[in-house]
Image (cartoon, rainbow, N blue to C red):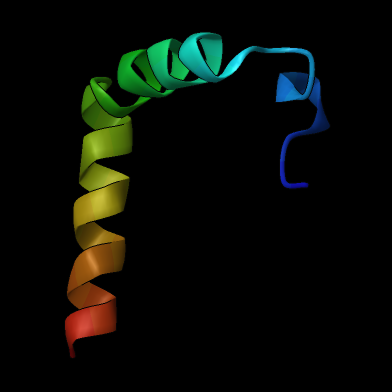
Length: 40
């Protein structure tokens, strides 16, 4: 697992955390950059 710390989370807890993380501007920028690299 990339982040073993999330193992104790329920599915709902995990998705709630993921929403929080992916709403962060620096994370959104990193995801967009990764998606662009994959598309090249």
